[in-house]
Length: 485
Image (cartoon, rainbow, N blue to C red):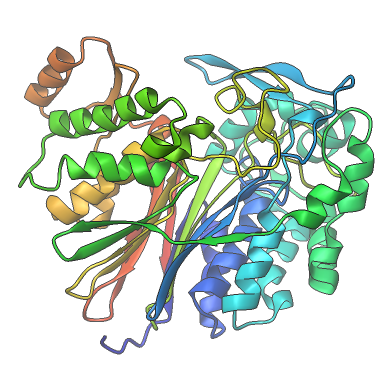
């Protein structure tokens, strides 16, 4: 391990998210300080994707240990069998529309705050007030809405304008805040200040439980019994290179591992071979149909769309890959706190049996897969992606591009991608016409995307090489950001 005069690197879905992490590194903090600060900042500048009302996973690496911190959402302890608030809305993606379910009864127990506080207690080196200050400043002073964030808000506009409380934050003048305009959220800043003062006791559990008493499922006991879980990562090897993936009950690691097994003996896998490997894992997912011995992760089919990813690394080779999600949000702002609760119970793929079809008191499965790659030559890669079911495809293809095709991170991330599911293939516009023709012949049921699209995920990566130099890239599909210091 060679000495470096630099502090570290951060990649994320927004410049301000990355800068919050960089600020911590420049103040002497480590990769975990950077990940915590960036995660809170994401709640300010990426509110459609990140919220204290959601949850996520962190893949944690130090020179002495590796583990997954699962702080994803938990289904309620009991079901409310009365008249519940669970309703349908339609999201408009431009080329397609999709039905989501929102309302108070679509919310599972959030783990975002317990998870980040656990990460803070076990690995942070800076004061909690220091870690939250960038997010507090941004929420109070305002941020400039980017083109991408405005587009996301238009997709879920029916959720952001579901009631007066959410309208006051996201559409204060009767319409969504447009790109180039200022977005402020002083209530969220005040909530963060309460977390600094009271930590977990600052989370409004009593208030949320009281609001859900008559028309939803969460009770105070749901919050009192929730805790983050440490798990061993799902490990895959390419020769002596160790790839650390998310573990059960998340389905992502298993599916990526299955696909990778079909590719790692190929010297130069083609897009068609990659698509076939991903099809194999997708078929295994379908055929498992809840068989715990085959694929335990598929007890609850995974599909979460509103995700963002942060990768951090420091000069001591500490690394954190953290992926968070709020679903699309349930439409309800927690009073005086400035954030929306998740709608994970409203995801049709998770809840195929209807609004009460979920299993009680379990961690929901997820496609989120924060990933760390530890190479014997001293390279360390930290990556992950947003993008619902496409997360597994995005991460696998970036891994193949880096480890087998030997591409640099920027090229590996922004190379055209593909995603097969249930016999259908979506793929971006490969420059090689012969590749396109072969994909079309192999997958008669297909759709060619003429331009790179956020549909195929948003992979953000950082790393360090044997000479102690940091590198990385953000995914252009989702306006990704990479910074080093």
